[in-house]
Length: 322
Image (cartoon, rainbow, N blue to C red; front, side):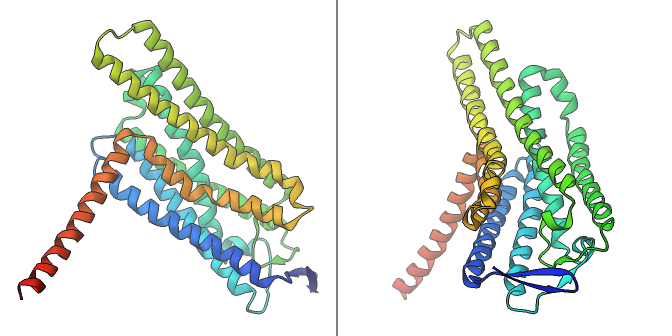
């Protein structure tokens, strides 16, 4: 790494520019895959959202993931372009005002973390207090909570701007990495909050699983229909536990590897790759949250493939007859 300083602004040039281009290009591919999965999940959820109030939360999660993926896509594209153009220096606050994808990624990332907690809380209330669940997670209340999630995320952007504005005398790279345009204290609080939300999500799913197991042991359910229903619920909650554990690991793993990232640039890049792979994987794992999501996706794919086969069959039939 060679350093060039202009007007007190450190600009870092990586000697392996080609590898960095591939590195950011990989993030572009990750963002595009995530966007494709998000659009597909929205198409599946949109068919049942009127009859399933909790799907409002999943819709909010998917929209948050779309915003985050768009932010990652634009940021990675800019960083590839940055290495081919003349490097620039900006004030920390300009990362919020002049780089639209920075607050976009910020809002989406925060909303994703909060909506995942809402999803785990919804499952917890469903198995703990069904009467409370019908009130707290009614369509109206759920919509309000999802909108409040985005509002809270926007307030975080305002807080970051105020934090960055206090260091207006500092110049940073126009690549606008979070650790540069935010203070060390704010970055620490942000990281701890994200880990806390991931752990809270895991705790709510564990509690829901334990409550369900205890209720099954107390009720007995001698009928075969009750046994099948309890078996499906147990399987669903177990899958949710695995998902929550994976989510927690995706948030905790970068923290564990972060001290090692200063010693090796490869480890630092690995940390960022692990953190951003959460976007497409979390969307793919969402199909396990509700039993009918995967079956609905399969039916949607079968209808789409059947329509293509029918068109192909008609085309070949006309050619053959002609």
